Amino acid sequence: MSALLSVWWVWIALAIGLGIVEILAPGFIFLGFALGGVVVALLLAIMPAGSITLPVLLLIYATLSLIAWLVLRHFFKGPKGQVKHFDRDIND
Image (cartoon, rainbow, N blue to C red; front, side):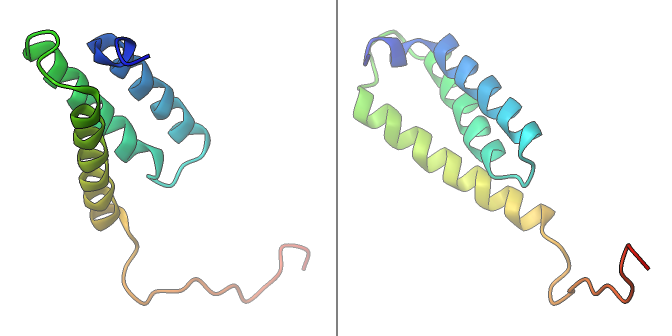
């Protein structure tokens, strides 16, 4: 399993899968994880094979995913304090 996670195209496949899940369940939750996977794939494509161990690779993925999620949350959140109120029902 660790040898499989050291291949760049596996991370691209993971990112595409998470991007599809994001389309099905929008909310910018899975998109941060997908972006982290893309960056890790690019890192693995640039670095020589076997230069990054699996724990370090997973730490990089987790850190980049968290940063991407926080950035997306900052840019795509609604206006502060704004709550949607509905005055009439759809059945009225």
